[in-house]
Image (tube, rainbow, N blue to C red; front, side, top):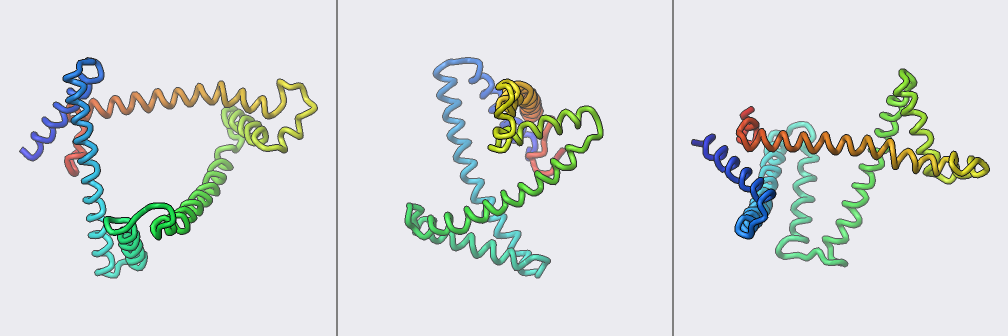
Length: 214
């Protein structure tokens, strides 16, 4: 029963939401909207489970003095401080302590992470742009045109050229046609993948959400 009941609930709700998408009836629509609200409530409740699991994992790590347990202390301490200043007894309004900590601690840390990510992207681009094949050559040429066309240097280099072959205009053509065509292909593939995964979950083929079952 621990397996059959969740599978039955998933199947019934999944089929009902599909019916709501294709049958514009007010009874079906209102019932589906009610289910969506219940789903929002369940997601909000799952945040509490996530916080509890985070505390449990880091507490055990601190108690057993595992590698990096000092970072666990920092994580739990900061979480407690932010909850104290922004929880039921605090406020998140502009000018509050929570808002100050968010703007002066969280935002700079995020900026640092994205700055480090830029170096990883540059390293990956360097490896991808090696002239090993015709496709890599086209990728390298397009990347150079787009990068130069996005900065003032590219405009200065080609301002005396015919307008059609100036780097900013060539960049717009590449972004509007070949890039957009590839982007739409990726979106279509992702949509088909989501549809396939949804059907696998509704039909009970994909059972990983039951807790370890494949």
